[in-house]
Length: 401
Image 1: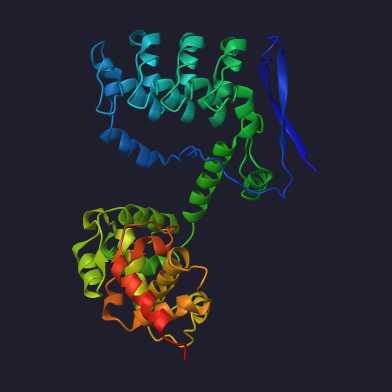
Image 2: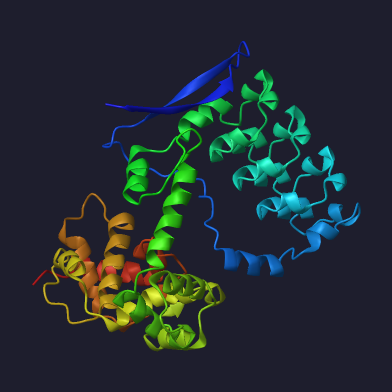
């Protein structure tokens, strides 16, 4: 059974009468899908202050009629950047005009788009929130009012601005404001998770994105009180980050350290190690520390039970290589299954081709490409087409032992 919660009051799109749209939450068994929207970022006050110093600093209060219109390469004015940092209230009121909130960046987004997604529309002088400014659409067809509906910040817009015309405005997909409010209600699983974390929330304005942000903030706080895991410490050691780890660092501190380190360009030592294993790096300059660590950590491990089970499907019951070697065999099998298997092939065709490949020294010289943790191995581990064809033919000529 569905559970009814609070609602949100908006003008009817037809008669203008104020109506309450009830929030009905799906049953706990419903599939848990977070919104594709990024969650509202959790703010660490110390880190935020440091970022502000490196960004706008204290210049917002010193803006004048000329500097407030100065654009970056991304087409953003100081008003855009202030909205992104939730600091619109620091700009002197007499400097602002409606036109400042109509200026679009290179993606067609105004400062109001950013204020809506960063929950600071309430810092905008209310007279600048009207049909003109709220209906400006970006390059993706999303208007300010749609952005506010998606992020649950429509309650920050004066009720007088929520006219029938605005509420009936449709995006490129044909969704009205009310449609988006309906689509972005939090799931029951999110609500249960928030309750389990003892996080307070307001049902009347909670969206999937806001719920996701609250959950993320709560988990960050929880991790800040926990000790790092053995897996994290092993990765710190492997990436040579021990000197950057402060004494008494929490699980969240190590998470932040690894998140920052893994997106940096791959180190010379990593590249040298990968090439010493026989691997060929495709687009070498695009590899990050995390990309190469995904392969190098496998070179020091035995195959997992899951990998061994998959290898047995290829009639390889005793594999003496590393986890990296196992993943290479499995990637090769996936390539053959998706690109080579035809009507005349039986179940053993792929296995025979993989065994033929393993006997060739060129098998170890696979070309790897950058790819995240969720990119399938067969998409980032490849061999020349000529070699693939050669091993396939060799496998078809052979017989299984």
